[in-house]
Image (tube, rainbow, N blue to C red; front, side, top):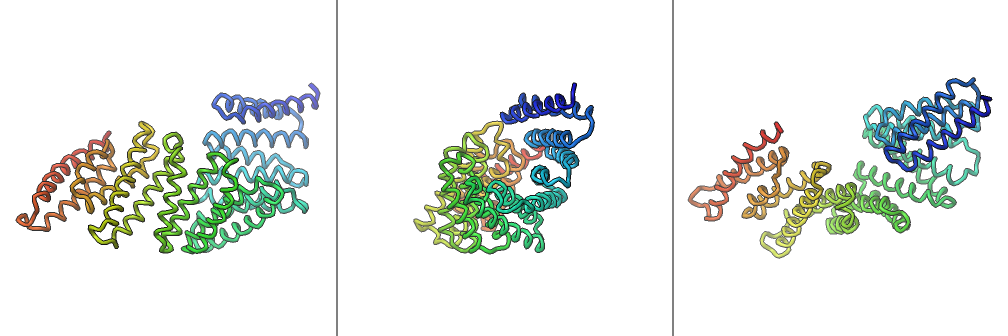
Length: 427
């Protein structure tokens, strides 16, 4: 077979791999992987050349994308390394391919998420930036969009490091991302999505540095952009919109505006509600929002006038939110374990709420929601111990009739919980 025929065959295989991978099912992923491996075998049998090197890089890139999508980022990184090694480094025509390989490698390293991987990801994005910055100006909007994404991702990596020097680098990178993406959005509407994310990540960085006013401004910019994308963006934009409102709630509450914080959290729940029983990402965000709402209400309860209608209304709302959230998680059946952490935080808040505000329902609440969960048993045991100790500080003669019954119920339930936790743990 002539070299040109072999190159044509490899090109066809890579086209088949790309088309199969786009559907992203297990079967088509296997087909795509097989096509990539066949292409690489053919390339191994060919003489070296520029065309062969570029095809080799494309095959390794495609293989890395398949593995990354399949949740194997470490294996994907190794593929991207092979792609980078195959691309002619000094060729101006190959700089876009190198930039894409470094971007993909950085994304995979971010997903690995270890401190070492995040440092490596920042380096990968830096390599992509160097090559994209070399693009002759005026750069096309798509190139500006990729450059802005590289700056943004580098900023995210720096922010996750958390030390003062890294936070300064993160702010610089995110500011550069916003500047580039604002230019890109003028000619490439797709850049508006990245621009919204850049503003959102800058807002999260401001939360890390306790700059509540600037965080609120950043999230406001994000929300304006996301609202303009809401109709065409589908569930992904809706989820990002809800997540941004939750971040805004944190900024509002931390700045002392509890009313605005509550308003923001309630917006989150209005956005997630219709999708929570079908989409796990919406469910997880909805549970987090409910916990945030409860924490804000708890702060207001601590300064409210006991027995007032306002306090009674807040207690009722908090109880409803906890019950609703726990029922939501339980409704996922065996998959409820996906939400074990946020539902545990809601359960723990409910223990505090009923113990301190509605002790007459405390035992009933625990028995209803304890489930076969060792962590919930531990939380319930601690809450019951605190409740019993609170009553025992009184003399038995001064206990009201109801309080005596509560103490008996809590003591009996404590024995049940203490006996249950080790058994659950062994299971």
